[in-house]
Length: 172
Ligand code: SF4
Ligand code: SF4
Picture 1 (spheres, protein in one colour):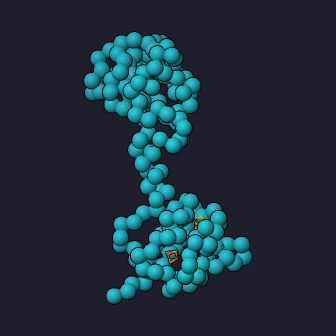
Picture 2 (cartoon, rainbow, N blue to C red):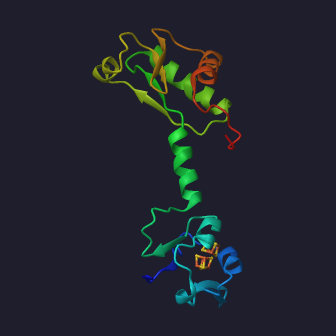
Picture 3 (cartoon, rainbow, N blue to C red):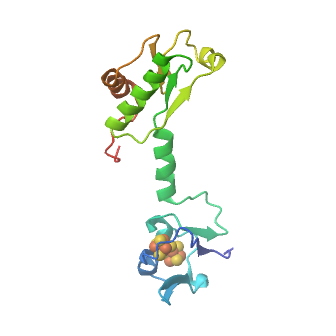
């Protein structure tokens, strides 16, 4: 039995690039007043995600879609987020720990990475992470340095060695 299936555009995400309008062979879309609109939803083919797969921002979803499909561009974004490195600089009560944190931040910046360094200064929290002496450094859940203040170049070396996605090319 056919269901009422047609695309919907989230205009908060839409760039008005017209890719969906040009892609659809069934004349579902119109371009009116400089805006792409769903004009003939009834023409849409149930199960087709052609325009949604092409949309660069994930602005298209489908009414009554129960296939589990999600816009590929959003899936990629989530994948990238999951691949993001997590860096924790531990210690906050002494000069060395503060300097360690600042050096790690500088190392991240010099490597051109889009990573926020978390500064963990609560001793109970630090012990829960399995570290008994500060300053310390954790990269992607691995304790990589304990009880010493890292220079910027030492921090860079550790990030490059232990970080799961230390490449800044954006294509990995
Ligand atoms: S492809 Fe996506 S961004 Fe481009 S006009 Fe259609 S809905 Fe908007
Ligand atoms: S899902 Fe397919 S048939 Fe429906 S509007 Fe998009 S390209 Fe056209």
